[in-house]
Length: 197
Length: 197
Image (cartoon, rainbow over all chains, first blue to last red; front, side, top):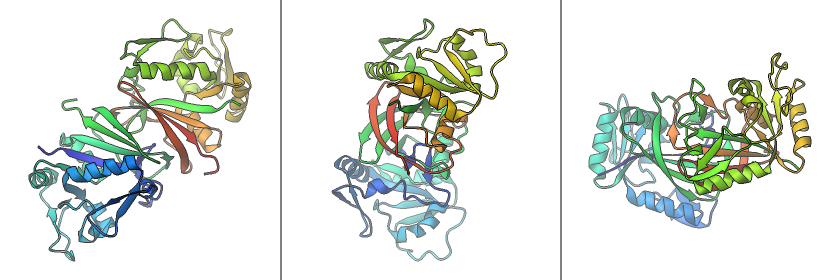
């Protein structure tokens, strides 16, 4: 059964981007090592520490679908129609883009809500996990009890301001873990969401 | 030379207390283990995992003075005149309390500003560290370039709301580290503040 897992690179004060959506301070670890980790796209090959590379390879092997929000989809211009994870992408949105230039890409625009997107993504993922790549979607999944795991790639920086990973939670949520992997310029922390907390 | 180190138990979403100043979700690790760690006061003996106990003993051996703000001092009623760390306490405040019932306790009320408090605390600490036990004081120390280290005792919980460890920083601050100690129900992360970032 697929788990739904939110994963972000986050500053110690909780931000996943600066106020201008910049990620320079947070994404350095994807390129600060010697170990190449190919992705599903030519324009993105990670170069990380061995510890981070193993974690990334494991994650890519185990993810079968990805859910994102419309804001991140727009910011990345839909990853040019091919997400680095190489899996089908479900975009939660109020309406389909009118001018999507990659109609054959494995992108599904879900206009009937987050729960529908999770259901569709799980079906496609099969035994693999569903990755959530969006702060607002992750928060809504938490509020709805739809999230099974949280992976924080914790970066040794204080941004002071920006976009929060967890900005608007309705309630206290207890977790178990973490499993810790120490990379270079990043600490990978994997938590499980405790149900019924 | 004494380092100035801020230390807090923090939720993954960055809170050191809930909106009612409650710390029940964050301080459980001080009592969830088998290893007793006596403090300087009878009313506080920690019972933690061996990993956390070693970290706590090291911290207590290496702290020579403590700086706090007036809000935490009031909340704790001045720790009854004896802080568990067993070191002199410097309280940054606009005016001395009129009715402080422990005039002989090693508490100094500093009314001429944070930099004066840091200077006085460093002098008393000698070769040992100065601990900062207050979010607002820690933030002001960061903004003034007075902080050398940050220890986050990261708790596997999302509080959703409350008092932030780092709420109002003026700028981006880069850190190095962390040193990681895995406790039970807590991950101890020790960072160094990078100067001139």
